[in-house]
Structure formats: C-alpha cells, structure tokens
Image 1 (cartoon, rainbow, N blue to C red):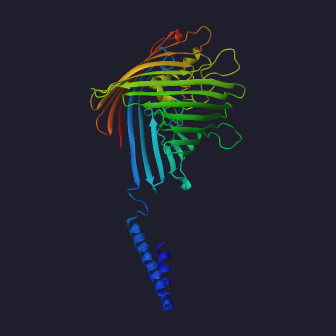
Image 2: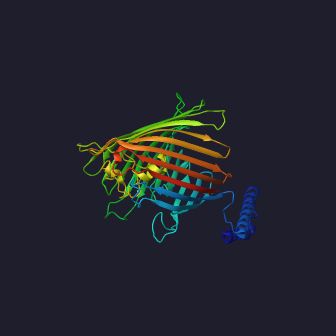
Image 3: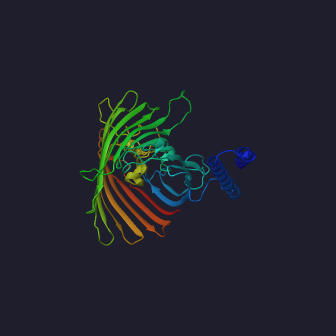
Length: 460
C-alpha cells in the first residue's frame, strides 16, 4: 500500500513541469493532493512500524471468568436412597475468555471460548471432558444500511423476560451454555418500541437434506419499554419451534407485562398458548402462565424483598387425540432453581414418568429440562445482610396437573437457600442448598432429593 501511494506521488512530481501553464487553482489543488498523500504515507509507516495495523487498544476489550464448584447431589432422579445412580460428589469447573472489537460506532465483533467439565474423567463429550468450544461468535451491526435496524449475526445468547420461554439454547449439555446459531434483526419502530425477528438453530445435526433432524426456533418478539398510560413494560411474541426428528411444529403466542414501581412493588405477568403439531399425527393444544410479584422495604436495614410466584404448565389429558402437555421451548434450567431442573432432566433414570407416563414423549433432546404438567406456588424473601453478603430463601408447593390412573397429584415440597458473598468487585463466594421432599405421587420411592454446592467465581 505504501509503495503504491509513493509511486503515485512520484508520477505527480515527474509531471510537474508540464503543469507550469496551469492556473493557480489547479496548482493549489495538486499541492493539496500531494500533502494528503504524504500524510497518508506517514500514517501507514507509523502503523507498520508499531505492528498494530488498524487495531487500537481503545477498540478492543477483553474479559473472562473462572467458576469452580463443589457438588453433593442425592436422589435427584429416583427419590431412592438405595439407588446410587443419581448421587454425585464432584467438582465442576468452568472457564471462559471473550474479546470484543468495536470496529466503528455501529459495528462490533464478539468471540468467546468456554470449557466446562465435571472433574477429570476418561470420558469424551459435552460437559465431561476438557473440550474447549466456541461459546459466542457474532457480528453486531447497528443502523444497518442507514436504517433503524440492528443485526446480530452468528452464535449468540438469546434471553427474553424472566426466561419463561426463551433463555436456555440447549447448545451444549444441560446448563453448560445457552447459545443459538442464527440471525436476530431488531427493528426500532420508535424510541421505546422495537420488534425482533429471529431465526435460530438449536440443532443443525446431520448436514444435508437426506436426513431431517434439525431443530429450529423462529418468530417475532415485540417490546414496548414503557406504556404511555400505565408505565409498564409490554412484550408480545409469536414463536415457532420445529423439531424435524419428531415432526414437531409448534407455534406459541404470548404476552408479558412487568414493572418496578417507586413504592417498592414489582410484578411480572406472563401467559402463552401453544398450537400446531406435537408430532406428525398429534395436535398441540397447551397453555402456561408465570405470575411474579414482590415488595421491597425501602430505606430499611438489609433492604428485604418479599416475593410470591404462581406458575402453571398444562398437562396431557387422557382420552383425547391432542397433546395438551406444555412444550418448554427454551425456558429450561434456571428459572425455578437448580434442583428442580435436575428433576425434570430428560434422562432415562428419571422417575417422573411414574407419575405421568407422557413425561418424555415430546422431547428429543437429551439433557433438556422439560418442564410441563406442573403447578408451582412459591413464597420467599431475599435481603442484603451486609454490604457484601446477600441471601435468598424460598419454599414452593409443587403439584401435577395430570397424572396416570391411581397416582396422586401431590408432587412435593421444595426448599431453596442461596447465599453470596462479594469479596471484591471481581471475586465472589456462593452457597446453594435445596431439598425436594416427594409427595404422595411417589409412594414407592419417597426419599428426599437434595443438592448442595459451594462456588467461587472470578470475573474480569
């Protein structure tokens, strides 16, 4: 590049005598061009000598995290002390490194690598070995083609609301990571209203069209950040989940309304219906809701917050040709705590199919927390006990909506406690403890499921 510009400059100088008869404006123009070329040559030389090219430290940011946990898990799938297949004492380690390059005011690139494993084993595969995988890799282009449209292209996390329908991309195994591969276009309709158009791949699986085994998420998500009449946040969505292996093709239509008021009250109300094909020959007709409310005592010691939740996920009715069992879409692992996610994990040892035999019929993803056929009533409290120590305690009553003949609907009692100590802005320590006492639906195996893990995390 420097050689090319220098050649052009030399050509201009050689031609200089022929320009003697040119008018003064033309001469001034050429002198300006020469000065501009000389400045460009100097800049390129400086970049070449520094070895930085066009990359500036102001444009590049980096970070990462290391999370180390120690687990003690008992009876999460069987409720049976004599069955040791679902007991676990293990370390869990996760490490991530990310970099973000801000090329221009509107264009950036992000890339992140992650590894997560349950201790050191001889096994190979997701979640068990030392495989490092591409966790995020996307291009962010705002104001695309001069329009009020932001594009996110590539491997990205996708989270809406409280995670009721979209949070967990099921990209690796279980709760390892949450990414999707795909395209999100955000249309800014006004300063407060936006419409997201999304097309994401949950599973690409076998390349080519000879085998139909992809899983795809697509649809629209409308967000009004502040209603002019009520001040609440409003969200409307129409989402499609298609699983070619099961011939599943389900549309979900829903709405969410939420707000945090100045008097300390906060709430979130969300509901959705599902229509389409549960399988090739079975129609989907399901519905669900998640209602949250909380109240924070302001200007008091510890800033306590008291909260309640009611969630309903429909179950499959006996004697109908349709499937009324809620499809989890991507509202998996986190929203009702770690232990309940273990209990709903789609793995063969899980004894939920003893309560309702259709438990895993409409999920083809191993490791998916397939929440369905469930009512949850939760009360809890959280507080900032010291400037660095926070706590959260909750109790939930669980029941099934539908069960097999002769099986009671009492799922059980669910207790959770979480403590976190923020040692420095980057370093934190945590403790999670939970117990699920099985109800009358599990008369044959009624030993409590428990989970305890400690955590140390450093984020930078």
